[in-house]
Amino acid sequence: MIGMPGNLDESSKPLYMQKPRCALSRILRILYRPKTVFTEISESPDYIGPLIIFIVNVLLGVADIYLVYSKIHLEEVEGLNLITLSGIQSFLAFSLIDTFLWESMNLSLYIACFLPFLLLFGGRDKVKSALSVIGYSFLIVSVGKGIFIAAASQLPVLVVPPEPPSPDRVSLIDMWKSSSMTAFWIFEVRIAIRRLMKFVLPGFCAVGVHLSSEIPLIHSLTAASLIILTVILLFGF
Image (spheres, rainbow, N blue to C red):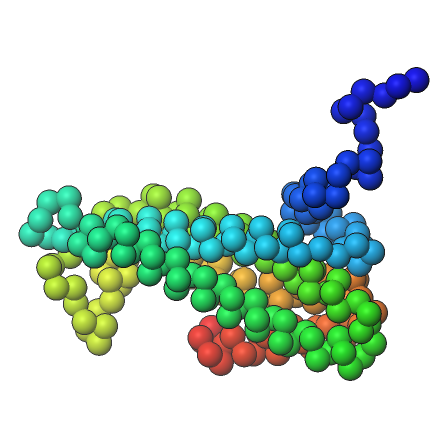
């Protein structure tokens, strides 16, 4: 019996279609079926999914920055915010570069901490799988950024003087939090999520690297601990 086109299995599709479909499937399942996805990556690693997640995180970061700064208006000119003042194109270009560099640095830190343990404690043939797992694990960051965007959309407008206060006096966020209980709780939630992410993401990566390679769990957790320590030392808790 001749099957319909929709019934063709994945292996019968062209290679250029198989890999993106597989990557998207893994992205959709990584949060609720992580062990299954980690096992799949161990057998067939890819970098398409991590690249998609990286791009999404950069775009979400830009969107979050845009939403926050679009809520800051200058006192003397009605409807003029900090984005309009600096120029939309300049603002987006700066935000894009800044977010790209930050995401690149963050991902590089994870790779730098896990790679020595992978090379020293077996699993050398699984390095590609482990790096793929790290990239996929950053979907957790996407979830956090999505929450940030949802929260930023609810921020009330902050009206500031033409020359915002210097950092040694009071920050814009402090002004915001003191002007509105809504803003106060939104920023408190954002801070709480950022703090939680410093532990959840390294732990999630550690488990994924352990399941997708031959590295013992204790060594994988040690690498995660180094990440947590480095982030806290560089950026505080």
